[in-house]
Image 1: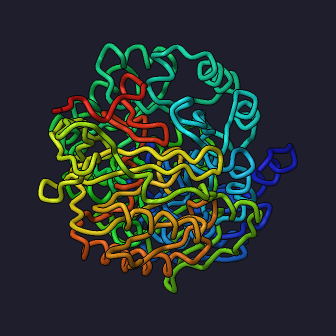
Image 2: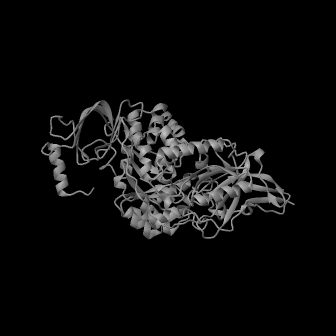
Length: 588
């Protein structure tokens, strides 16, 4: 909303009682995030904004809602999320996040940009003012994420990024990984400069950095980081003025470890924020969204007001949005939650712009929108692709291989090396040791590359899984115990124009189509949840016990998360940012 002399004049008149208010929220216990107080109040709202606290209910107003002593809390803010990873369009996503109290999202849509460039990004965020939550843009900084090491569908150069940063809805330059800074790469430093010149912050992605490298990273004006796994890592960032985003996604479960450290060490919470980063719809529906981070922190012993502040005013201040959101105070948008008990973070009423979006009857809904047809035709597998592309050839009798070793509930991995058997000149998987094949198949119709590796910790006993969601290049990633099933799931993804597939013994067991850029579905949230639950159960029948197998699968190939990544170019040493050999020793 643009300010004008007339709009400010009308706000003042409404606050004075000269102009009729739109709404009074009567009899609330106001949670003041500035003073850490809780006190009785009435809240007056006019033209989407709060204009008075302790409004006289006798003042002229169109509507009064009696909140019966419920706690009035600012709407929650997700400080960093890739909305595509929920598998839902923004319109469908509101159905699951808004009932949990999330009224603002800081969104880095780098996934759709990697697939379809600026056209896909704009299509995703267009008409966001019609959503039941507020969408702020973290402009993707690295599309592609690893240039020269992967094939992507889209590119955002300095000009595109600068144009996006000039938009009113943009609040930051999206996450930059260490290689772009430590490598002193002009393109990315130019994007940082553009963001700063637009008076906007720069988001970090400081995974794997020691104290020396963190100093360099902070010098480059990276303002935050969401990759802390231990309290010590969080402390290292805070000491350098890097705000710490405490994350709880589907495969990155960090809140408990980090907030335990914060509470035990009696650390100030003023430089902490909450985010989800990547969280599947089923987990949001069942656990909560940002509300989960708050609830978990309270359960661990944090004062409820402090936990709420992390999700509201701290985030608003960090993104220079304090004049708009993050508190219940005059001049701010009326994004307000009514909660019965501050120890049970589940709102009974949710307001956005002073309009009810969730009440006792549930979520009030949101209109669907049409997306460009070309965004539903992005999966173009090479016509010559077959199971033969998955062969790992060697002349040896045995070979020692680099293997991606997964770490439970984290996206980081370790490199281990193991001797593998060879049959008919091909390296074979070892199900007994839980070492199976992982491959990436280029899906943009540009070169038809297929790269192969090995992974430990997936737990698959038979069959294969594949996904067209594979960060951040979003080629097709596939794991399997045999090449024929791997071929089957990849070709099924081609038929569906993207999605998740599980197969065994030459038959497709189950699938979820994600035809919008191969990343999202246009189905309603509840239908997607049912499909995902059924799909995950079918994956369990193949021996994989992961709670979010496709989320884990989508991160294995990421070439910016230590220690190993896999793209269609080959196996990647993430910290050295280069392609390395899968086979390190050969026994002739």
